[in-house]
Image: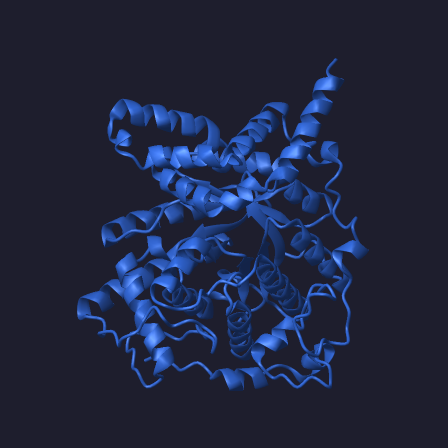
Length: 501
């Protein structure tokens, strides 16, 4: 039988009075957890206040410290990148930024033309030598190892991601488990400084339809705390008072004995991965996904973290999506509960990648989108959560991976960490970007002395194509806005061409 998590109001009271005194203005009247975390800001602009009663402490803005990251010296930024690779990267990013080309490629890959072997082979070959080569680490372990070593030679680390999408049957889940284990073994075989973590998707370890059922049941328990879930293990708070529950409008049926059996199988697969990670001394990062299944993903993540996050070593990292309106409150509740239980919390902070589908689902059900109303709100939420986690690192044993392609967020977090005296070699703090994206930011952060990892998906081309298509759609705006990288690459290629004559 699972133990009940502490109620939100009690969790709020668990905050250290000394810690609260540093941030909360004595005249503040708000006691909500959202307000509490909002005050842990990286540097809010005066014209965009988050609190009615802002804290007395002030934090420098990016404009006050424009040189914390040098993103202008293209020669220094790309000094470790061979000209051939730099040229390939520039061309690929230019193609990716052209919307009609992305649309055409997506249409062809989803069309019946792919059922024709000749067409399929031709398309896969084109993808292999363009987008796949730029955004993926390789097809097999040998290619992955070479890619990781090249990145490590350039001063970057790797987060290995076996790029499998969701599955609906246990046989495929078992196959995926073996591939995730192979990722851990590959990481263990490489120099310790070269791999920071192995990424895992719960939707690849447990059938998707079962995770949807579990999420429904967890949401209903949030609505009705007396609703019994006999299969539930100890966990941390999954929902906040502001969390949307519209996915589950009617009371769901309990899991059948067969479903409970399959749920335990999925959970055991994750625990086996955790044990392998302990043996290899490699962190395990659980990816976030759609809100339809995110409650079940958080349940798996938090339950395993309770078992395996020990002392000052958060082994299992969950992912928090800052574009969700309830992100701040959920982060506060989960970390506070973990602190009360003596568990170091590991968080990978991202903005989020399912904006379109999330808004469409909420609208179809007649509810407000769970996504922030503006991009600035998302930026503010991300920066607040990043600052909060940096405070946790400075005052305890939690860990954070700041996964961002936003230059301003990178600068703010770098400055915050510097001002707080957080050691740049601290294993519990690092930045991360997708492999093949935001190269200037990655190298800029690295040159400033911070730990930086590249999120490296890998696997056979035909199996990774669904991942690439999803990434192309999710990051359409980001790819189109990759002007910083493209401009710097053009300048560096021009410099190299001129210097060659």
